[in-house]
Image (cartoon, rainbow, N blue to C red; front, side, top):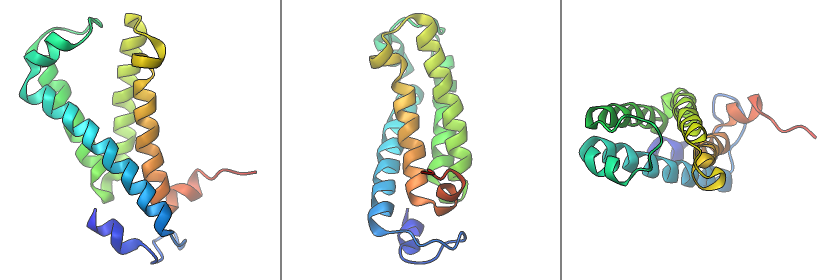
Length: 145
């Protein structure tokens, strides 16, 4: 995250200046997403039995090895997202991971706004944080009037 602070006020590769407010907001959203995803990955890796016991029955195997595999995949994607050079790749991979979570909850019949769409909310945090702090993404995904 230190490299993000050095880009404030400087012209990044895209040649567009990033405002302090935009950079801080993007960094805050990114940090929140990384903390949440990191805690979820750690819980799946360290105490998979507790995760199995406290998870709703959504049709995935109640196997500690399976939860550890999910935790390892999530940890890898989160690290890629947290590292500035691979943040876009990490965001794409997290989108796939979260899409799988949404599909699983949808198939299991979980409540729509509480469980099923949570992956969409988290994915929006991931992409919003990246969009706010990366001028190249804002140029690529610009909102046109």
